[in-house]
Amino acid sequence: MFAALNDFLGQVLVYTLIPLGLWFTISSRFVQVRFFGRMFKVLGGAFHHEGRHLSSFQALALSVGGRVGAGNIAGVAVAITLGGPGAIFWMWIVGLMGMATSFFECTLAQLFKTAENDGTYRGGPAYYIEHGLGQKWLAGIFSVLLLVTFGFAFNAVQSFTMASSLNDAFGVPVWVTCVGLVLIVGSIIIGGIRRIADVAELIVPFMALGYLLMALVVIAMNISEVPAAFMLIFNNAFGLDEAVGGGIGAAILFGVKRGLFSNEAGLGSAPNVAAVAYVPHPVNQGMVQSLSVFVDTLLMCTCTAMIILLSDGYANGADVGGVVMTQNALAGHVGDWGRGFVSIALVLFTFTSMIYCYYLGENSLIYFDHDHPMLITSYRVLVLALLVWAALQDLSSIFAFSDITMSLLAIVNLTALVLLFKVGKRVLDDYDSQLKQGIERPVFDPAKFSDLKIDAAAWRQD
Image (cartoon, rainbow, N blue to C red; front, side, top):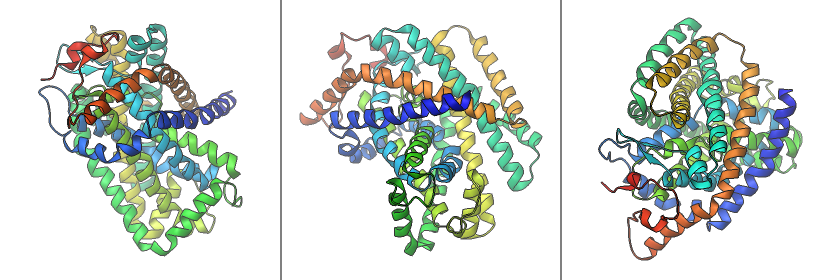
């Protein structure tokens, strides 16, 4: 049953994600291209903390920490195994189109965010569905799906992945990993979003740059073979090389599905984090989050693809998949210590993904009830118990179930984005208009959008 429903929803995503991303791209005059340089400029001024608010960079680090996870190491290998090297091309397309999709969903999350009593913000698709579309029932469905998918299912998958990797690579007993997870994750999540963001700000740049540098070393060692690797990707993507992978149909299907799983653009997860940042204009965070899709898919996924495709093991038709393929490939380039490097990278990636997934679940619960701290405490205890349970299980059914709920999340969120696109475009036009007037740092004025249900308290310029 899971397999049939997964296949159906996968087809729906294939025929939805890319066309909608293309529409968002063209309608916004290629916002991810024309603002690409400005993204770095905005990011350069995003490190400043505004009182109790989170900085834009902290929100970026948290979302990158969630996006850059097992999908970048194991997921890319799975896509190549099932869809051939051409799946990487379609991951790139999903990433490029996803930059525009993420721009709009995160801009809308900022627009409709709400101010909390403790000086922080809350927001996300549930908030723009309720306040932008007036559909509280649909916002409730989205929140339940977000809680089940990220708070529970994806956290279970991350725990299992980490415990298995440490056991296989270093012989660490699963129970030791479980104890470590409970102590470390528990000490972080009990501090709320501020502590979660502080940890992400510290770990994410280190882990992303380390993995990127390793990939650059591999590319430099095999520089003469790089053009052939890219040709293999392009040929297989368009069915010109059917000898590897499952043909053009499989390349598109698995490229799109793994691309969505990796960068989450359109899924509705990243906007929950994007909404918590202090920015002068919603478009600022839209640009920053668009950049995170670029980092995840165009950089990190390509790193893994090059490590695999440039390896002797892949050229000789090694029959392995998942993280083992990536481990073997890197070991072939730099020696056996490469297996340990992949495992350590995977541990860091999955760890940051865990605290990210936890926060998304917490945000879902708070959407339903702001005034019951015992609800959050119970959720924290349940998540920690789940991390222990999941590490000891065969999670094949949870993998399949999470793919289904992830697809449903995307469908609900993409529907809301289509219906709210004119609102998002209006906010973008306001930003463009201020730039044309010579205003280097556009500022959002909620009075210009008085016809919308915007929390003006969330837009006080401190």
